[in-house]
Amino acid sequence: MPSLSSVTHSATYNKFYNRLNDKKKNGLISGTAVQRKLLGLIYTLWKKDEVYIEDYQNCKIA
Image 1 (cartoon, rainbow, N blue to C red):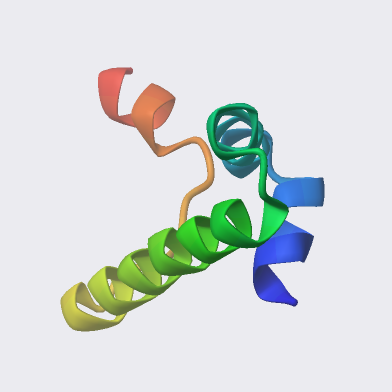
Image 2: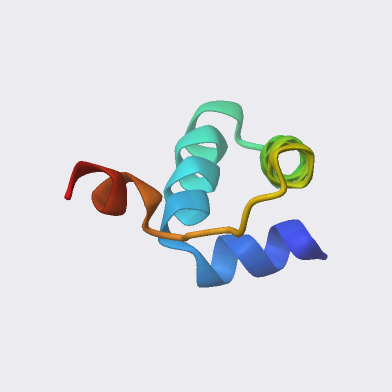
């Protein structure tokens, strides 16, 4: 469910999901890839004890 929610509400994960879905033609594989990306993000944020910033790349440049 978190992957479905992130695909519908986050532009970044939506683009990633659609790009994979065009290649693989299977929503289950694309959904699993989004789940893996989310788990990696959660683990990194937890390990570094940081807060999630959705527009991190633009904040980092400025």
